Length: 180
Image (cartoon, rainbow, N blue to C red; front, side, top):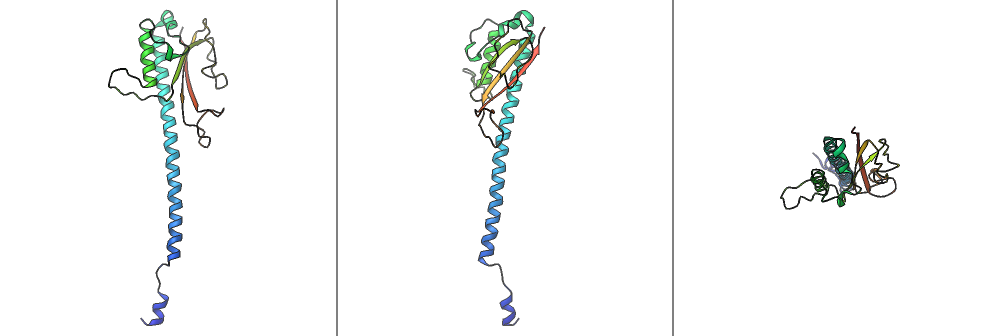
């Protein structure tokens, strides 16, 4: 090769390398943001699944007690229903410990819902909707539909659609069954 041919053979310039690094770093930052979004959505789905599982388990316990025993489970604020008569009292205590993650002296860890709250009430119909809310309707003593409501705090992120429409970070689910 002569000298004129050597001048035309070049490697990458410093500017080309820097531009490539900027483009690559922007792509990696986008992937990191996508990963964060996926983790938040996974956490929200996990909490909703856990709450649904707990609600249906409690509804099954209420259903198993029959018409006479089911009324013992009515509880406006589950965190204040400790010390009820057996067997409902034991079931309510277990339910609350599952929701709150408090297992007494045992070393058993249970996944819990942050800032959990729950209530069990009767309705004439299963008319609990996002508009009426789980924690608004009063107990209707003559109702034949038992409703288990569970609420918890979830990170409020408007971009992801996490959080209630009123701007709070409250989430809730409910399960209802006509028992009789």
